[in-house]
Image (cartoon, rainbow, N blue to C red; front, top):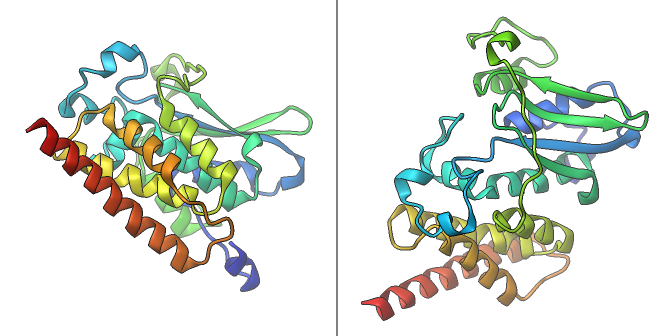
Amino acid sequence: MEEAKRNNASLMPIDSEHSAIFQCLNGENIKEVNKITITCSGGPFRNYTKEQFANVTLNDALNHPTWNMGNKITIDSATLMNKGFEILEAHWLYGIGYEKIKVVIHPQSIIHSLVEFADNSIIAQLGLPDMKIPIQYALTYPRRFPSLSKPLNLAEIGKLEFKEPDFERFSCLKYAYEAGQTGGTLPAAMNAANETAVYAFLDNKIRFLDIPRLIRKMMDEHRLIKDPGLRDILETDRKTKEETIKIIEDEIAVKN
């Protein structure tokens, strides 16, 4: 972001939530923002108990209720880690403090993000869960062209629901806030551990609840570099992935 500012360049977000935030902020004063709320569907397990998580299968986790995405991000959606990444992204894209970035579960995935201002008014961006809309907007901004996506009919949708996320059941979301607020190389370590654990889960090497367990372990063991350069970040990524793979392989060997 510093480099973009230095070169007077704009970064156009493509992710639906960050495109929504961009659109809500268009023409507004960032200093007058009270908070940003990023919505999430809650994934396939939003109503699961802690006990039910223990029996989640790969097919269960890949069965997303509203979005059709690749396997890796679909698992991130099931753990809510994808929302954790979006918190970090919103912080850097818009220069908003983590205390002003909230998450709300919205099963219909119609509102993609909301921005509340100093006068307590809220601007939201709505649309069907279709990535063609934010991608097209990024390509044609500031123009808006006709879209191939289906129009939104609120009467057909019928209702829009919202509830607070449970940070105990979805601990990855809590870890993302912790990593962002700590800063330095911790977000890179968290990301690397998550990536390794998710691919191990996709390969049926670990169970669903092992994903947050491994992330927590690698975050706890990480030696923080507070003001890292690019080399530090890349080295953190490499080392954390290696260590996470070793833990997984050692645990498999003990079982066998």
